[in-house]
Structure formats: structure tokens, C-alpha cells
Length: 279
Image (tube, rainbow, N blue to C red; front, side, top):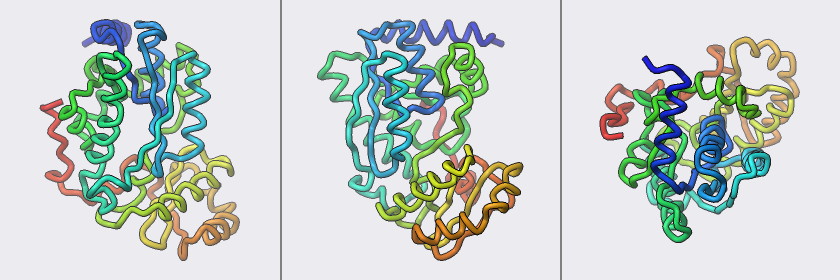
């Protein structure tokens, strides 16, 4: 079994072999670590971070990504995309993430080619294998690589090394696009995404770091870690009033607490397959 140091050395070997890379940079734990490693192993002159700003990407996340890129002294661009313009995306099929990632890579690849970068890379990790991750298939189809996954690096190892390297994202809560808050089969609209963004931003301002507002038509289902449930209940009236103001008819709490990808729990094993062997 490889040590964390050996995995990091392997990551360096992979990146050096790529030579010049465009990093799909959301500002999350994984992409921040990937960007940091790329800068270390290749130097800023051979790295370009690109952040895609769209309806599914909260303003707070974009602002954090811009700030973090500056802190890392990384060449950085923000481009504008629209998932809702992708045919089939708004219908919210179970492979919705394929459409999203495929479109993202279709934007990044021409930029990389025009500017002389040899590869587009993104922050998929070893933990993603075996989960419902249609985006991995999109990366395979587009020839986009995932160095962290290739090096066998896991989330816990990324957090450990990020803390060691002084990255403030080392303990940042996991994040997924706002569309992941809407059950498969329910239409995704700009209004729903805006409501979710406002609701989650309000809860974050109240001090809840890990939070999801799952939207079931006009009902908001709040997920926070089980240990935080009493704290939400303590401000229940305030939360209820704010989410009603945003536009929800009903506001509920999930008593099981936060868990990543909870809307995938209704999928069959066949629907959750990601064809990991092709990645």
C-alpha cells in the first residue's frame, strides 16, 4: 500500500508528464489542492485555472475561488456558462452531471488548445469511483484527466496534505452544484436555483457550515449534520420566516441529517453505475 507521500510523488510525476495544464477550478477542497500541486510541480507559467460561472454556481463560491486563486498566485480566468441552455439538462435526468461536465469540458478544451496548454484536468478523486458520478464518463469521453484519481489520492489525504501545505480549504465543507438539490425528474429552473442559493446562503450566514436545502417543488428540506439539528431548531422561526420570504410554501428538516448525495438514495444500483472501468 502506498503512503500518502508516495501518492503525492506520483501526482507530481503525472503532472510533470502533462507539462502544461488548464485546471477546472471551482475553489473546492479537491480543485484547490490540485491547483496548488500543479503550481508546485509545474510553475505558474505552465498552469491556468479556469472557473465556470453559471446559474448552478453560488456567488459566494465564485468569490472564494477568485480570492483563493489570488492567494496562490495562480493565473486565473472566469468564464460564463449556462447549464440551463444544454439540451436535456433542465429535465434533470439521472445522468444530469454528464451534461454539465461535458459542457464544461467543451468550453475548456478550446481555451487550452488556443493558449497552448496540453491537457485539461479536474479534481475527481479516488473516493469518486463506485459512486454515482456521470461526470467521470464525460471526462473519459472528452479526454480530460483526473490526476488526483490517477494517483489514488482520497479526500482524507487531500485534507491532510492541504492542512500541511497551509491551504485554508483543508476543512472546507463538501460542495456540489445547486442542481443537486433538486430531485431527479423535477425540472431545473433559474428560479429554483436562485431560491436554493438564497436559502443556503442565509443558513450559512447563521453559522451553519455544512448545509443543503433540498427543494421538492415548493417544499424546502433542510439538511445539516445531525449534531447541528438542535441549533437549527433553536432558530426555527427565523429560518421558517426567511425561507417563506424566499418563496417556499413549506419548510422542513431532515431528521437523518446531512449526507452527500442524499437524492441518489432513491436510485437503483443500475442507475448509480458510473462505468468506472472506463476512467
